Image 1 (cartoon, rainbow, N blue to C red):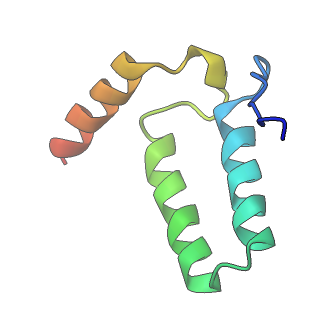
Image 2: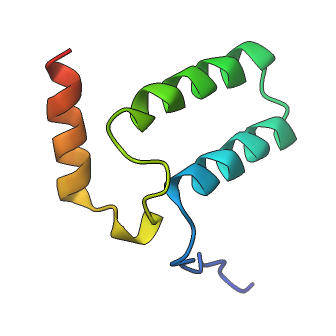
Length: 73
């Protein structure tokens, strides 16, 4: 059987990635409360990471800075 691999979409923005994730959550029939929680979490993340940031530019340093900023709240 052929192994599935992810193809990097360099033009995909963080916002588009989040929208795709929420669409996937709906397709998997997750509870509406769970999806609502994810939407609220995404709004919080947008305060630190610009929604228009290309996903390809996000890296470990970006995530570390995000975690450090979240600890300050």
